Amino acid sequence: MTISARLSIMMFLQFFIWGAWYVTVGNYMTAMGMADLTHWPYTVNPVAAIVSPFFLGLIADRYFATEKVLGVLHILGGIIMFATPMTTGNSTVFIVMLLAYNLCYMPTLGLTNTLAFHNITDQEKQFPLIRVFGTIGWIVAGLFISFGLVYLAPEGVKPDVTALPLYTTAVASILLGMYSFSLPHTPPQGAGQPVSIRTILGVDAFHTLKSKPFFVFLASSFLLSIPLAAYYNFAPIFVNASGVENVAATMSLGQASEVLFMLLMPLFFRRLGVKWMLIVGMAAWVVRYGLFAWAAPDGIFWMIALGILLHGICYDFFFVTGQIYVDKKSTPAIRGQAQGMLVLVTYGLGMFIGAQVAGNIFNSYLDGATALGPEAWASFWWIPAGIAAAIMLFFALFFNDKVDTSEVSV
Image (cartoon, rainbow, N blue to C red; front, side):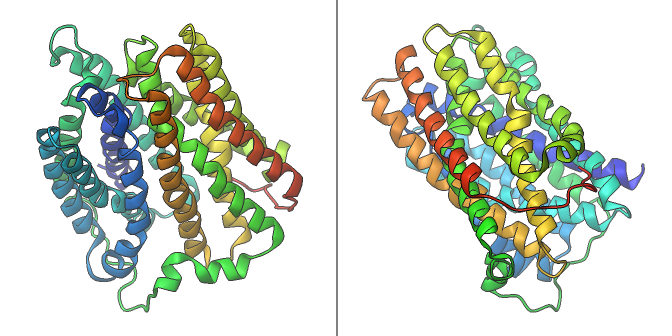
């Protein structure tokens, strides 16, 4: 088997694992009587994203072979996830278990990228073809939960409200952990090199890149990540409450569109440029939340499905475009720091604050009930829509930077 095929299997399993539990855990918690705590899995995940660079920079990248760290973390994470459903009787312990699992999982995102880049010869051409199997893995996870686990779930019970997705994650994690030890040997990338907290946080990169346009971009990325957290937390719960039968499969429509728009991004870059790509990405979030709000009172499926299908524009035009913008503005010496800083600001701090904000807003509408009614869902979705619209206008008015995107390849 070729190196590319082995790395593609790694990516497939890496994101199958994430997609198997992350999308539907809110529905499971609601069924277990934790409806007012469903924002916590989406809070501990960013906490782990904030901690992850420190683990990678101070330990994994300096002392241990990448494939061995990847294997140990996935096996340990699988064991933790296997035990997690046994703790639903104590919500605090349940959330702590999810935190422990995420602390094992989140560093593996960087480790799989490191392992892939180290073992291919043409990163620009080979990596996208390997990475796309990760998105396929996420899609397959959603389809498996909806159409595979239905045969294991109690009759008449949706698989996503049972512990089966968590057990699926546990099994897949242990499988990937064992498979990781067979991957090509990848020595620690930072062995013998000095490292500091300043480097990990990207302080040097910020000082190099600082300018009014970059500050507007970074501030907008951070602020927009706050209303964005509402989608990852509450969209699956909303889809389930709207009477959709196959929640996980329906949510995977977003990843299918992500693949399509990823392939089309070079064309859009040449036509629109960075500023308008980012504005279109921000506008797509506003439209998505608006569609959910309009669909809520009557559970209009086509509006819900369209809102999910916008994920290709929402994610690729905002997150991926932002990563490309940072790459184009960076020098080789600070490129890694700059990307790490962007992840910390968006996936870390922004999503952390967003999960708490969205959770508190949701609970204010919940007001002691076990679920939101259709009208409450409509009101709920207009809040992140309005916030995203305000940030989009701020960015459109104050961001003005020229970037050469003629050679962008995604």
